[in-house]
Image (cartoon, rainbow, N blue to C red):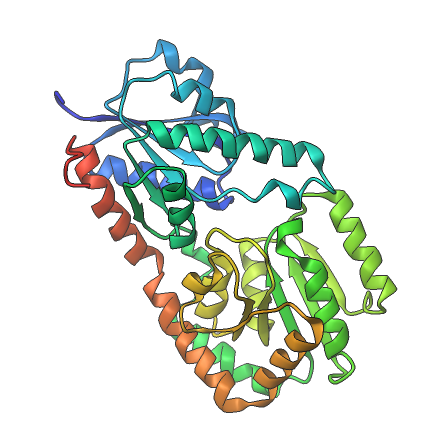
Length: 364
């Protein structure tokens, strides 16, 4: 390479508050710190980020880069274009939800995800290296034939994380509250299995009178969201379920501060950032032992092997009533959140990218 190395990032969508979007912007900053000249190319972007991105259709007329990084999370015409390029390619893989979760509610999203997986298989045969944000995702890439895969947790937005003293004071204040708040943060999407959350809280309500279920996250499927609301009414808990939708950072912090338990029964996660956020706020985590969740939670979560409502409700009651167990989950969660904190992850990603920016692929 002559002078500064040129690195082009490609992403189907660039949205600042989106996990992949935030990660992409952080990668761009790291690359610049390493001395690279960078450009981000996207198929779609929000208006407030248009000065940070170029339309990927313009790339053929731009000077060729030394390295291409592709942020993979869904199907996109970008992959078809990258298959025609001769430059070294690094895949940064964030997971793709299996299409079968979406087909009953949003067939077009299911088709897009199916197409994305087919594209990913082709790109794995072409790419030089991949970075996956969990062992679960890395194993998927290896199964597609790409052996050179490193694991680096996703670079998420740390602005909603507390200082250590804020987390401790938040935990102490919960002992004086009477209402039990069960929280889940994540898109309303079929793979997240919100219906299992509703069913579990319906059972728990028989044992705990003053309880609420708070669901934070935008909807990926209006038909799925409507089905959930109808289900909540049918099982008699619509009066204690709050669909918050997308919230501000300040509102999200307030939700974590008010939560007594963070409950995740998602059937498919590539990493699950809200687990880390909840642990950082000293909220005990109960989660389904599936996909990437066990790796992200480490020893800090109470994992259930089955989303049976009675089993899950029993686990919640135990955490609420067994002070020793609850404190163990809090303490382990605080330690695990520090291990996955943005500064540590950022340095790990910088170390991973540095040889590629220098043009050295033999070390990986």
